[in-house]
Image (cartoon, helix red, strand yellow):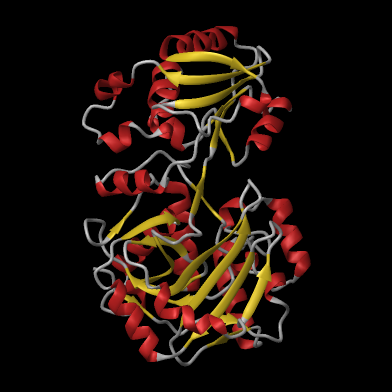
Length: 419
C-alpha cells in the first residue's frame, strides 16, 4: 500500500524572482551551456543546488550545494512552511501533432518501500554513476530537491481538483512552452481524502529511478523513523487524460572508417528484418503494425529504411525467461537483436553508452547523424502505457531510455526536508 502524506515544503520566497527565473529542467538534461543560461536568469536558480559545481580548487561540489542551500534559507531566499501541505500541479503542453493537453499531478511525500506488488514498481534499469551522484547530494543537503514522477493505479486528482478553481499560487511557462501551475493545499480534510484514495494504490515510477534508488539507500543509512523514510513524488493517475509517452531514438557511433562493422550491421539487419526503402517523410514507424518495427537512418549508404522483425517467434528463445510484454517491447528487441546479437554489445556497454546515443526527436537524430557525430539511427515507436505497466507488473525492468514521459517536471517548485 502507498503511504502518501503532506510535507512542510521549503520553497522560494515570492520576493526572490519569478518562479520562471529560479526553476529548471531535470538535472540530467542540463549541459554546461544550459546551466550558465539558467544562472543568468537568476543567481538563485535551482541548478546551483541540484546540479552544483565546485566553488574553487579543492572544494567539494556537494558541500557547495549544502552551504548555498543554508545561505539561501538564512537570507530568506527560501522559506519553510510550518504547516504540512500537498501541492496540486497542472502542466499544459502541446504535443508534436499540435494538440494541447493538460496533465494533472499531486506533489506529496511518499514512504520509501521495497519494490513489489501493491507497493512501488520500477520499469527501467538504473546505472551506478547517477545513483552515487544523487546519494552524495542527498547526504550533503538532506533535502529532496526535485520530485520523482510516479503513476498511480488509483487517481486522487478529483480530491484536489476543487482547490484548483482559485488562482494558482504560481504559474510558470518554461522554454518548451509548457505552462506549470501550482496550488499549495493546507486543508487537512483534503489531505486525508488523498491519503485514503491512494492507500491501496500501486505506484509505477515513470521518471526518477535513480532518485528512488537513492532514497532507499539514504533511508537505510539513517536509523529510526522520520522524514528520511519518505521521498518527494509527483503523483499522476494512470488514466489521466493528459498522460503521454514519447519515444527515445537510438544512435550508433564508431561505424565511421570501419567497413567490416558497417557490412556486418547491414547484413545482420537484412537477416533479422524485413527491409523496405523509404524517404524522410516515411521514416517514422508510428502507425506500423507488428512486433519490432523501426525506422533506420543509414548515413554511410545515404538511405532511409523501414524495418519489421521477420520472425517474432524467435524472441521466445532469444529472450527466454522474459514475459511476453517484455519480449514485445521495441526497445528490448532492438537491444537484444541488433545491439547484442549483431553488434556484440553487452548490457553493460548499453548502460555505459559505449557507441550508443539517444535523441528525443527524429529531427535531433537526423541532425546528429548528418553532423557525423553518429553514423546510424534507429527510430522507435512510443511505448504504450499499458505495456509499461505490464512489464513492471511482471517484475521486470526495461532497457535505459525506453520511455520519454512528456512534459518533464520542473526542479525548484518545492523541496522536501529529510530531517
